[in-house]
Length: 156
Image (cartoon, rainbow, N blue to C red; front, top):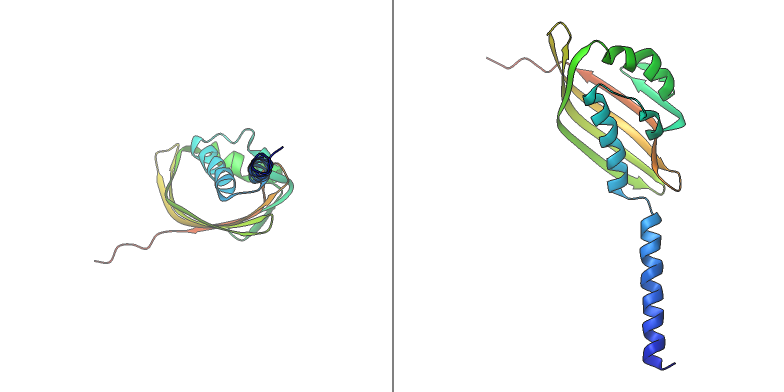
């Protein structure tokens, strides 16, 4: 094998190993996709199969209450709530995501509008702090804390 052929083989091996390593590494797009999938399920008013986005021991906190793991939150809070809604739409959604090793810390800001089955609209400003962990194969939510408030009335 010539020196040029050996250098080419080493370069090709390094490129392949680099590509494989980056495919296995957690990334912002993957973490953002989990947040987006959860948001989209809520907007569809259909949270079937959403538990796969959460670690089995995840903690959900909403507006001053520890709801427990996602299944408890789904069964006793979010699921029954969604049945009372005609629609749910997020607006002005932004997620600032930073990484600490295999942990992603997301600060989410948004507005949302719920329309109840009665036709009554509810507008809110919302914020969430979500922690995701890379489990070696996928991002999963391990903790989420959300709160909301009524928007201020426009000044006259």
